Image (cartoon, rainbow, N blue to C red):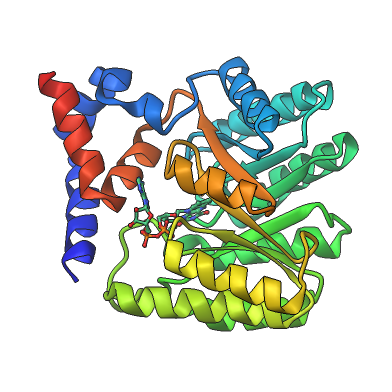
Length: 308
Ligand code: FDA
């Protein structure tokens, strides 16, 4: 409960204009670089190369979200396409996360679909996987519609995300599994500020739903990306996959750049596929504040940066 209040408090304060302005001006001095690989693509690619040398996979994530104009969405789509072109000449495992509002979902579903199609097609051409990240609750239906439309058009290189804090997510998962038994889905707890009508206010319920959702995918024929740093849950998943003899075609672990490095290494050393989410770009503010909201110690780290 206290954890939920802290999280909602930090996300609330982060939305206040002068606070945002101040943190944006201070930038990397406040420790943004701990969670963000850099402000440009070459820095992000360097981070992914380093991860691959250590036996991890990377997920490239161009920061930026809640784009509210057609021009803005088209511009960021062009940047994603250019990133895919750049990836095509890199000897890397090609995997990119995209936020549906980058593609124009906040402007309209039709624009988002047009742009998503261009991204999925270019990704298919260069052998890349695209994950449609899940943003806040007003965009869940639109994101799932995009996923279904792309899959129906033959873009089998696309996956999406469900958040266990949303009351609706278990039903969404069942519907997705019925739609596509060969689904690849990332399960996360959820990082946005949501009200109790749509999201479980208690962490215990979020965690229980997380376990149930991952369990359902492991019981199916689908592939689950277990995206969490929760060691108790991770241990349970490890026990299940070991008992059932499930391999990398059915699950992988995904963790965030800069978070729980010892856990990342331990999972790799225990023989699992581990992929690290590598955000980069100038628009790091929303991403950074969500990481602060997840853990009080991260906020202390920033405060130390201010006075240190
Ligand atoms: P939980 O919050 O219970 O934390 C478990 C433990 O992990 C903590 O005790 C702490 O030790 C450690 N930990 C967690 N966060 C930390 C942090 N920021 N810094 C340091 N330690 C931390 N969300 C979303 O809404 N849409 C999305 O598309 C995605 N995508 C995504 C991809 C990947 C690869 C990951 C790992 C996560 C996401 N998320 C996300 C974020 C997710 O919803 C969630 O906010 C974070 O993963 C934190 O929750 P945990 O599952 O780690 O558990």
